[in-house]
Amino acid sequence: MHETMVAESLLATISDQARKQNAKPLSAKISCGMLNAVNDEVLCFAFDAIAKGTSCEGIRLEIEHKLMQGQCKKCNERFDFKLNCPKCPKCDSEEFDLLPDAPLLLEQIEFEME
Amino acid sequence: MSKKIDVGKRILSANEQYALKNSQLLGEQKKLCVNIISSPGSGKTTILARTIRDVKDKIRIGVIEGDIQTDLDAERIRATEAPVVQIETGGSCHLSAAQVSGALEKLPVNELDLIFIENVGNLVCPSAFELGESGKIVVLSVAEGDDKPVKYPAIFAKSKVLLINKIDLLEVGAQVDFDVERVRTDARKLNKGIEIFPISAQTGEGMNRWYDWLVESVKDLQVD
Figure 1: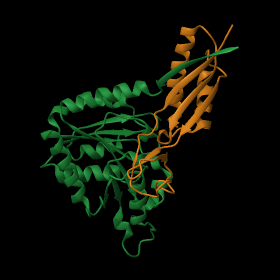
Figure 2 (figure 1 turned 45 degrees about the horizontal axis):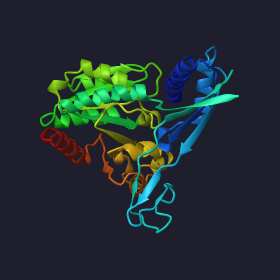
Figure 3 (figure 1 turned 135 degrees about the vertical axis):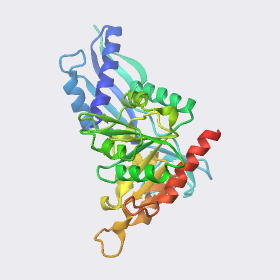
Figure 4 (figure 1 turned 60 degrees about the vertical axis):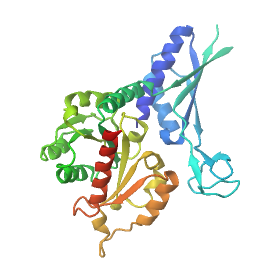
């Protein structure tokens, strides 16, 4: 449900960029880590609802989910962390550091060109 | 034809700015601030009320209460005589750093050692909003089931302490199927350093280790 707040921040930033570029936004790319707890369907629904009647009405959101990364303490391998198999895929070691989760980012906006 | 503009902006930066302001204020005054997160009904308020009564000779505690409606929880804290500020979110599923910033202004922060923030009962959304706290604490009561760290990994990955509450229900004869060891193992897969204290805020069992952790954390911060 917190996706509504995410959608509001997103709408404010995209609208602001649209004013600066003086162009109509078509789509936006977003990325987030697995701990951001963002559900694509809920976020798109919330965004569509609050964007009605604004310059952002009808734009497409592309959401990329990034897996958490582990780094093996033995062989230094970086790998996608999986909860059901928490070990280094290269050397099988269970001694690894979990790297910080990716933040919720607005990566890119695509605008219509005249 | 279209053109693409790289933005690279943190979407929740407005919240993060308030969180930074809160953490600076608390850091300057060397106050420990703990954000307590759990499902509704896991016993957050009972844990807080008992903790405040039991450690009041050692640490001075203030509370920020978050709820969707009512100030029932604030009343329970007020009965302990600790200063408390209630935030009614009016439907929002989590506390924001801006709300906490306003609440900190109403608390006598300079007369306290520790500020508890009791977040809205919800195991998902509050974990995504930094409040400027020193650390998060997750509460899981045994009636909720031992599969929660796997199902709701974010909050278990981000917390400094896991309190497994209502362990008195695990006594022989109670119909609760909950494997404490499974929770320990699953939580540590996500978070090696997490402290885990099985407690009963009702009977007081296990509470002393939690109190020791709080008193030590306050002390560590103050001598720093």
